[in-house]
Image (cartoon, rainbow, N blue to C red; front, side):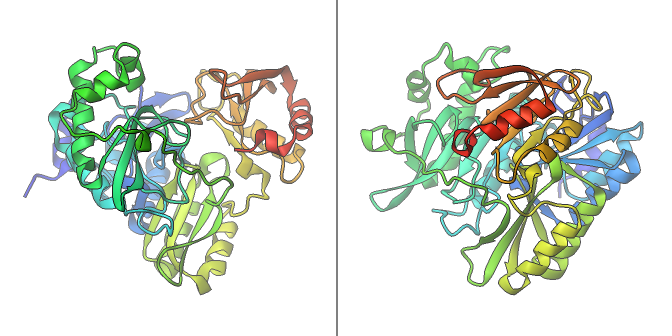
Length: 445
């Protein structure tokens, strides 16, 4: 049997990076940040309790749900080793400590239970994670290098850009995986496709070819593709790839709306998943413990983190859905899109980040009171141009200029960056009035 990771951890030499991990605590204005990369976004009830306890014991009790289905503990003090050991003991670390950075694999939160899925992505994801964690050469990848496996689920985040994405499709009655580089299934045409059985081989070939070609400063796929064409890249993969017009003209169908909140019927008869958003991405220990209690009593003892900064409780009997939704609401989680905070995303803000020009979390709560019910759709408050809180461009972005003052941008697919600058130096009241004046269709995802 392999030596427990917790016994090996003190001997691990972590490479320099500004990106937090479970073993690398990165300092911020409000203390240390520990990022817990969850396998496929999954978390057991016992693990949820362990995270809550660690946040209380070793930090300020502040837990964040990230936009890639992971968790972060903020405000960590000097007892970093104790926090790491508690999380490792709960099974929240990688198989090999050196592989923690590269565990950036995103699935749908309804993987394996979604009625629209073409295949269950979890076995492939497990195989890929094992390879990423235990292959020393792959540990050279950037801590931000990310892969997405999309099984065709109705509930899926398809706008986040990934260095490599794979998406299920049917060709001639068989299941295949379309794939693309430095983009996302929602907006990009695939470069080619391979049979589902070759999914693991494809990912491994792409990662190794990237490492073969990329210079040290080219840490992301988009940087390499600025010099190497996608066609030249895939020509050297050593795999038989289907690149005909049927594949290249295929597009992933995107389901609009906020179906990740409330009840989501599962493929399995009589069962549903219940989704809730963490207010502005923040979870308290009591929220996490309460959700763990609900899945022990009324579910299968598991939770899933969503890329919409929330929780999904799967495998709930339909006659228990109301009780679970009520329980989540009582904990302070948001189960309905009618609540204004579900439409707002905000970065850490000046209370926790030295780069932020405004207290975005507090400003978002004020803005929520100024917006009429149902309008607008996704608005992102960003304290600086880094736009950390969202992995893709929101329909509307408020970029801080000073405390309580923001520039408003509206997304435009034809323009780079945040989109069209609509107004400068708005107060929150002015921003709320202008956003309400815009049609919902203009801002909706």
